[in-house]
Length: 371
Length: 127
Image (cartoon, rainbow over all chains, first blue to last red; front, side, top):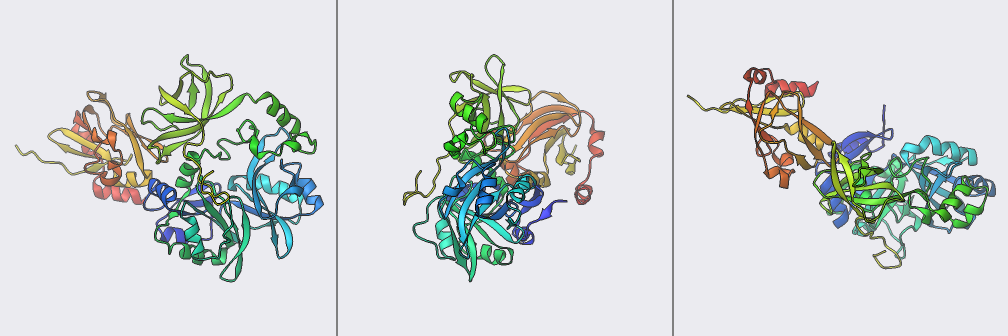
């Protein structure tokens, strides 16, 4: 039986359609539908309840850091305070156990790694966290997690909490909401400016109602979160990422600390280092449908001679492009100039290859609103 | 000879059918469009095609998934709703009226009689 998130009743009362996802009954969309929610985030803002996701606090001592550096390809001692980092847990072959956001924050003058991870990978991740740090504190038992995303998310949030004016993309802070500490990071997974907020389950409903006082924002479900992240070309665990794909094969080598690839402590360091120098056998590409047919996860890609050249890992309807878009892997030796076909219901349909992202990211960096 | 539109009937696959002068108009039920969510594309059946009841004859794609549309009864496809090609969302707005999908010549009217009435369908949905 899927579990309920703390605000389940609130979401239902607000018209959410709940579906089981990664062990939880989650809002997939509300009354106005996925496309409207998607557009509202691109044009204004939207509020996502992502309380299904994992959140853990790990005290930063040498033992914990040495243990975690076996799995995480960053120099954890060099992390900057109040900064978030996109990274991974890696298995012995350099494959991705999970993708994570790791942040260094102080709570009551004690230093912690605050890690947010995928709901679908809680079992695997928490085994590692507890092995590395037996006193790791699972935060999602008592805290909800919300994402406010979109160009107007600053306005939505600054109405109810005092926001530091110099907060940029991937900055994180402990801020105050109604006399309680909340964790606020400038991040998200939609390609838009936005924030993720970890707040106690007791305060969660009042907090969301406060956010909804802004009449241009709305509750959004996981359906639009998926189409937004796909337009932004962002990878999703279980689709672009799994234990048999390395971050380099997934086109995410930018997220690796290259020095760590020479460190034998790091899982799969030799494989990753080889891939970085010799290129992996697959590459990630963007695809746009030419017909109106939808591109979906698992569809097979062919060249004009009907050779299987790869497959789609995520596909959806793009409200911004008004066409179906997809992310997939093709083998590296595929001729860039050749046409690509996708098998859709036993028909070969021409698709157009494109670079990622489909929609330009709009993160807040150094005062500018562009990347 | 009275030309009357028949009572609307429903299939277990959440399609509606109404018959007028031996021609059945078919679409998906309002319940079906609600559960599919935003519909973005429809692959219409070919006009002139002979089909059997329960045969998959076309596909609607919502943002979430592709769903097959079945022939509710035996017959021949006479006409398709071409306005859906440009704007499949008409089905979301008006599934049981202007969102009709195709019309077919009925070869076996007794199959229509066996379909669920609106009341039966409501009960079916509550199960």
